[in-house]
Structure formats: structure tokens, C-alpha cells
Image (tube, rainbow, N blue to C red; front, top):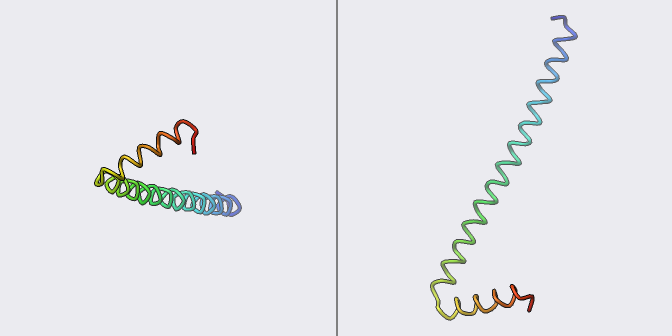
Length: 70
């Protein structure tokens, strides 16, 4: 492999490494966001289910939204 081919190969590897790094960082960020959101939703679900009046109101509003009545 001549010097020019080696430089091209090195630059290509560097470019690919940077792209993979960016994608991995974005993927990890989205995974963290998903995890935090899922935890918050679970907490809200537990709060709603812990209070019968709140649960009834939630179901009422849920039904209104499902029927297009806001």
C-alpha cells in the first residue's frame, strides 16, 4: 500500500469513527430520554391508580378525548 492509499484509508477510518460515535451518542441520548419518560409515565400511572376519585376523573377525561370532546 503506497503512502497516498494509507492516508486515504486513515482518513476514511477517522471519518467512519466520528460518524459512528455521533450515532452512538444520539442513540444513547434517545434511550435515556425513553427511560426517563417511561419512569415518569409509570409514576403518573401509580398516582392516578392510588386515588379512586382521580382515577374516575382521568377515565372521564380520557373518554371525552377519545370521542373528540375536549
